[in-house]
Image 1 (cartoon, rainbow, N blue to C red):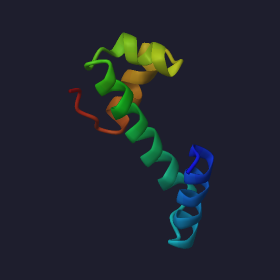
Image 2 (cartoon, rainbow, N blue to C red; image 1 turned 180 degrees about the vertical axis):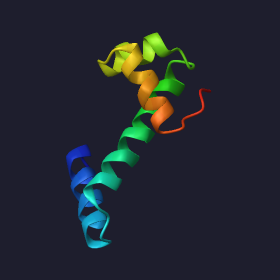
Image 3 (cartoon, rainbow, N blue to C red; image 1 turned 180 degrees about the horizontal axis):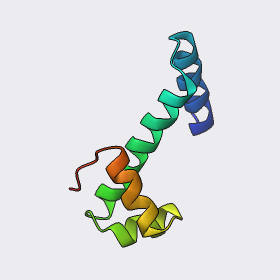
Length: 70
C-alpha cells in the first residue's frame, strides 16, 4: 500500500472515531519530533535542521509536548 493510501486510510479512521483536528495535529507533531530526534541521537541542532526549523522553535515544541530527549 502506498504511503498516500495509508495516510488516507488513517485519516478516514480518525474522522470516523471523532478525533478532532487539533488533537490529530498535536499527536502527529509530537510523534514526528520524537522520531526525528531519535534518529539524530537527541541532537537538537541536527534534528531541527532535518525538520527545517530553528533549534529554538524545536526546543519550544519539545517543551510544549513534554518530550524527553533520548
